[in-house]
Length: 399
Image (cartoon, rainbow, N blue to C red; front, side):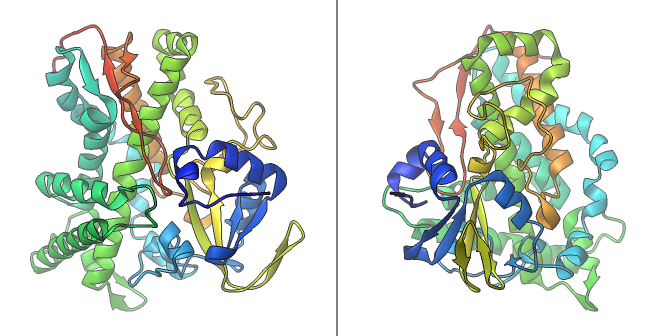
């Protein structure tokens, strides 16, 4: 018998045994309580993400949209189907090409070193809270056009939004209030930019404020919704992946030593950390029409959850899937999604993660994780270590 509920304490505390059972026994599993199907295998999710005529994002993609039927009031390109998705995503595409992102490397290093410099002499810091998350927050804020002080305050609201307690289904009242504050601030920033436009500005707010899509300018609520989507994903996912990668390297000292001695291994090491402990645990769609899968009849209007983290540990796709292996070279990955909604920030995420690992390992090659203080996210949406204190031999870093 399958006993799986994404909001249960058992699943939010340790989902991996549940995911293995789902993959083996019920790859298309029905959750009657939510009128929703759960996909746990790599191949099924890989295929479904390209079948946009069957699986629609228009009615929302978050767990609350899919499970609790809280459909979005306003849409970003994250919750649009073709052709609208292509038109809105295309506004930002030039910023996120491989070549454009490569030009950000020195700025990324600069932000990281500014965070590291006052901490390395003490020989201790929290990877996520002191270095990785502030770096990602400030970087995505620059790309969007959010002032640094606003960004750090907005980041606090995001943390409240994701906070969960046992027995909690979805966002708490405090979380809803934090989302309201975040949207209000995003709308204020959009209105200010519209009132004082920057004709040559290439930050996202400038692009959105002067854009016309489908013959109409974007509304302030539409811009605020896009700010929210880009800010949350830009600030959260990569820091969790970096913390996780450093944790698993610590657990595998032989692999850590090889990366320290040969920094060219950092890129594939980060890819493996992202696969092994996928921060974006799950997202979903709605069925636009009936379909059959694994002998089950899925009906139009029902929800479908894609268990990304489960798919990236699917033994049918990855040999020794439950083993952390920096020498892994997979032919496919779902770490950044797939299909038209594949993460627009894939090149940014890869570069940011690699540079964070390079810079941290350069100053703390002998680090030890304070395991009794490390803490994983408790929730249905995200996975990973959001507290990862480390100790190491003190040094001095010149910025």
